[in-house]
Amino acid sequence: MTAPQADPMRPRPYRVARARREVRDVMTLAIEPLDGNGTQFAAGQFNMLYAFGIGEIPVSISGDPTRAGPLLHTIQGVGAVSRALCAAKPGDVIGVRGPFGTTWDTDRAAGADVLVIAGGIGLAPLRPVIYQLLARRERYGRISVLVGSRSPKTLLFEHDLQAWRSRLDLDLEVTVDHADTAWRGNVGVVTGLLARAPFDPLNTVAFVCGPEVMIRATASELVDRDISPESIRVSLERNMKCAIGHCGHCQLGGVFVCADGPVFSYDAVEHLMSVRSL
Image 1 (cartoon, rainbow, N blue to C red):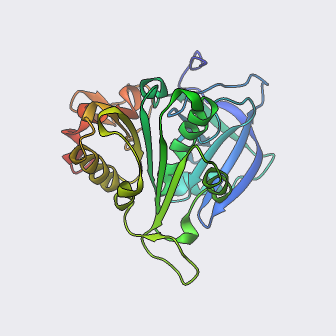
Image 2: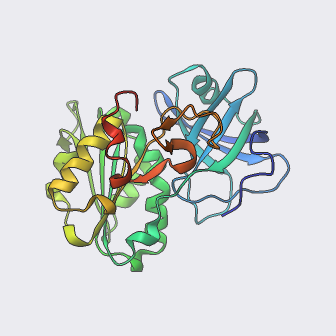
């Protein structure tokens, strides 16, 4: 893993190599540094992406940490900066600070069954985890990937889902909140898929990312199913501004989400997840 640049507040210029539309309001940008010095990252880390003249936002890296090449970021256009980034075309230049943050710590899961549970855009930060688990598949027990989405039209990474569905060493279950007439899969919340996932609760590590209400409900359900809070990892990415624990914008009690997270052990943040502003 490469250490953050010497001046962590100064963005490096990156050129957009490719832009891929995933669904209506979600784009994946593949970016390369203008100075030619590549950036390595670990699953769970994020970069601050800067749309020059508009601002910057934290965005998790959504590509494969085991492979060299352009950095991938999957962005949902929900605000001025994210919409500007989603509108970037090949050849455009954006700013990048990072990578920052804690990782999903897949070493912690060695020898255990693994649950990867994603809701909506939460699949983007978890996609590097799945790549990393599959790159060292022999290290883990049963791997189950559970994906929830609002509708079939908002499902991300359809090409990846097809590839994972074809594997015999990974269980993939997908559900949607609202089906259309063509949908033949599961309907309902993602926690409803847990009954389909084979795992030993006393030897399982879970990685959970999605909307905060989904994370809370899923973590609570996992604890009810006898997975220890210490074995549940969640990603909290709200309110991050400086990414280095300086501005205090993301501070919750004694925790700085940007510097101490975004990936936390559930037992460390369970008490914070009832805070309304989180």
